[in-house]
Image 1 (cartoon, rainbow, N blue to C red):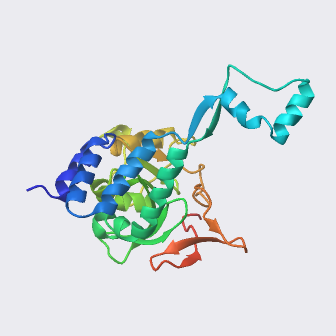
Image 2: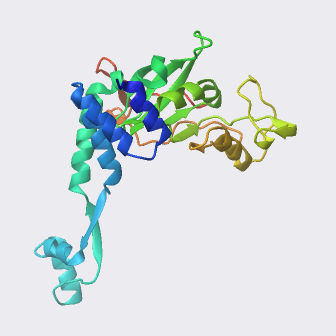
Length: 280
């Protein structure tokens, strides 16, 4: 009999393919998990849908006629303004409807869905209006050590993560085994050992058996990115500016109160200050 692990394995083996995700959504719906199934389908459709659509500018001109701006243009050129042969981009209403539904589903279920990450050791704490979830992970080998991790759902599953280098080094295996992670933004610089002799990946290679690393390679980060990509294929890494941590992750701002303070939604549904703790 098929179980959840079967579908997750298929998704991890083909992370760019929507097929296994949609098959999993059908299986969830048959088991009565309609909200989770709909969320996967909505996010898959959202990833395929452009946020803006082009229309012939003649149609846009129809909306200009009789408007104050249209009258000003006509007065300036001495005749009615009728452009032709061009297109103009406008917001896609279908994308907007999908985005609203995505936010509604996530806003109700984010705690339980995010708690599935990392084999259940991830404790979701806050959700901001951009969909980023902040939480804590306890390393399996050392339960008294916790790491801050921010994650983002894409196409129904956590695909993006933001964390310090030490957190990624400790959690990479279990995160990659429980979610189709595609992008990782490191908020501190990875320090990688320079090998004097042959290494698994050539001249340089990280070893997850080592707890300390020595020596940075190049200030542009090219060598580090090459090593990271070799160690974790299929994941795109982003590094902070050389020699310093990100002061905060660069995602759209959270909801702001009149006082100007960013807030998030905690597990109890209360608005609380939303602070990013990755920066130095």
